[in-house]
Length: 129
Image (tube, rainbow, N blue to C red):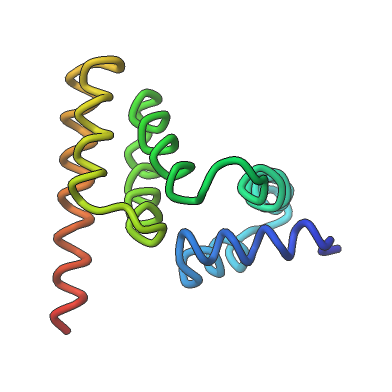
């Protein structure tokens, strides 16, 4: 059963990550994975991302750094797109990743630069269509 927090979370999640991705995540969830989708949507997107104190842009910056530190390229790709949606420039994304090179390690930052560049190429190709 969808709660108000779940619905608010879905709205924010769609705003940041894109409706196609989020809708597919929910639609493709099965009996095993739906509890995780509900948890992520309610508590990550419906609670923490809804809090006052940090803008969506700052939250995206933090996510890029933390996901780089955790070496999670699939999630990083998703959050690079989200960062662009939240108003970060490519230069700001680059600077976040440069910061991670020093504090998280050069190999992690190199992988993150590769992922970010691939997202930028996809975005550029889509904008030409």
